[in-house]
Image 1 (cartoon, rainbow, N blue to C red):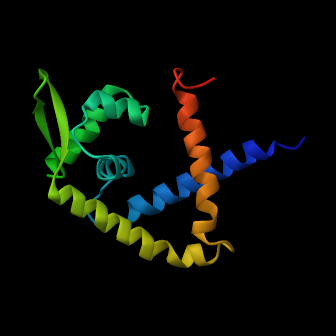
Image 2 (image 1 turned 45 degrees about the horizontal axis):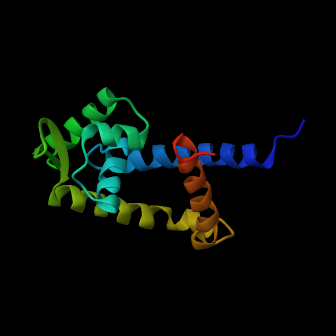
Length: 149
């Protein structure tokens, strides 16, 4: 029995994620974990000011998991939790300059560390990116019942 091409693609992506996660985390000089980096990356890409519950939904994790990740980032000075001006009981996650700089350092490291690996791919990362982005966007739309058909 042969697996479908879509399953094979998703399987490869899963294996790549595991290998990349392990390589990323082993090389961090300060023990930054990938979930912490992805929150920093999210805040840089899409802007800060979101609440912990919004971030938990975006990352599809429970609120306790996100709270733990945010506490670790706050302890390191990479984010701060400000009161929500519209709801005094809620918090807003704000990226600090140290958090922005730490994200940039991780991005530089990945580019340098994985350049030899990328050279062995046989295809430029820029060529593979559009198909992967289209798949991610389709999966993102499909997770939200309001936008899925």
